[in-house]
Image: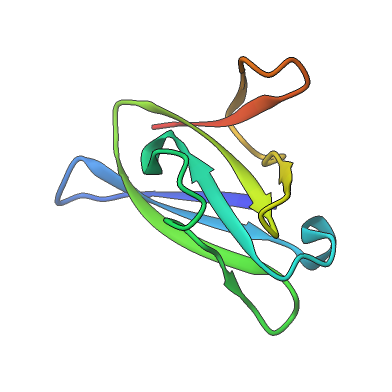
Length: 102
């Protein structure tokens, strides 16, 4: 998995590019990025399936904040980003959220 941040010079935001490898997607047919930036809506940021079996997606977020998120595979399996800036506790005992710091 990977996250790339590109800070934009013309406005106070950053383009965030997410990529999940085929192995990390674990045979998923659909993958979404679900987080506080899209109100935890699994339909808002669906990743594009690539020919090699990996998934990618880019979003633009305002700088000066932390954003919590997780990946959702096939609307049933949640997992975190290994390269997240940090992890945040959740109200679910067995889960933490990945965090992007902008």
